[in-house]
Length: 84
Image (cartoon, rainbow, N blue to C red):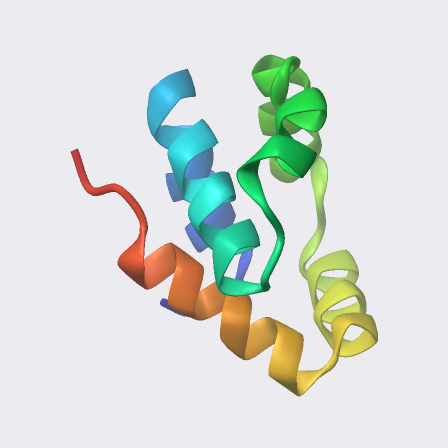
């Protein structure tokens, strides 16, 4: 999956439970335990708003800051996450 404005909009179109599972899958791909992500996933509507508000330039800057290896892990998590 390409990480761009369209792919983030696709993520925000998921149900809250589906998005929560995608985020958990991404975290797991990066070696982060589900118990550590749970506190951050209480406000899914806030997460959706933030994802929708990101510009292409912000997305590009974020991906650059994350580094190639972390971006690869995120993409793996997106591709392997729940596809209900």
